[in-house]
Length: 297
Length: 299
Image: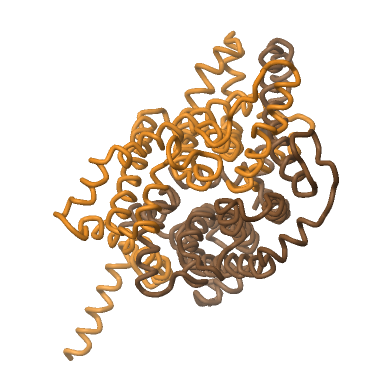
């Protein structure tokens, strides 16, 4: 999937290179300013991440540059105090369920949206776009009210259902342009050989769609692990994901040491980073955006 | 006899529907449609109905309660005052950096990955990091006082600035990646054509790249604005949730989960959605007046 677009961007930059050379010499003050701004952003970013990291390993840190002693005790105590094993388990359970269900619902719909033209297609596509454009709290509060009414929240099922609301449209939004670039002649050929819709789906489309499905499920996974608002509104004491746990621990501060929270935050970021590095092996973020952009027109 | 005419009639109907693009394959849409109607449209309309059914007073009592109380009404302005500058800054700061980085150079992929890192932080870790880093005894204040630029530590957390910084840290990489992809979608031959006509880089940027990029900028602004507008955890953690950064989502949350007034909470959520969609509609309206050609950079 990435390969097709890769060549176009590469040729773009390759032809751009000769034009770049003279400009780089002329506009050096501007370049300095831009690179300075990037460096300033990164210095502060390192400060923000580093202070959490150092604090999570530090013992007795009051007003000095670095803590007086280093320890890994905060991790073990946070693991026990916050019952992190269960929290991580819930996070995994919720995100895997959301990924599987949203792919199962989203992919067939995006197939029809990519291949077919039918009355009411544009309004329908807009309806699918709306949950992505709305702030989660706006639809989250009415949704949570409905889920509480039917006793689905607070609980694991409520968290999964709430997280599906932005995830399914996200799958549709990323998969529709992906399916559009698969040539329909392959399917026509299969149909001519007598394959039914089911057979076309399982034996022709599924292998072709696999990389796209993988990419969008990793992105949904990252979004779900990081989703705060919807999980916060629908989770109960035993169905909190890691983000919500950190938030509740932070906002009810004073009882526990701050370093334990730092340790939790480091665990969270490390796992997100691992996920994202895996995701970047399959998708180039700029290309994904370019594909999303094409559907909006 | 009559049975065959009915069968051919049904067949004819199916043919006519198929000519308009309606046939059995559309059933594949059903799960997604059931999903969006059941889990998005229905709760939304339910909330809308609920907002007109307050526990006491007329149909509009919840909206009246929101708009007549300056403490509640002010949350709209507080949210806009945070989200608009944050989204504007993210877009405007990303343009020169992405413009500089659209060519090919060594370490570009590494730099892109580094810029993606803040997205993984999430709002909660960003909040915790900002509290540690920008706090009165944090590294930032230590450096500034150590260099003699400040005599007293500057207060940057638990107020407006803390929340703004957290919005920039999480929103900027996102805006940057989007704009970089829009910029690499613009055909570079156009700019070289302008260069052969004697345009310097300033003119090339203003007359060629910027008009082609503008629709993409509008889209990026909308998406970062949505992210910033729904600010909730950072407003509580690094902000001043009782005063300066009591954003509208916090007001809705408190109405629902602290005073259990679901009608008021739904009303606030509807106001929030209306304000946000209003801003987006304005931007998209402006975008629709822009050039949308086939030469890339389209929004």
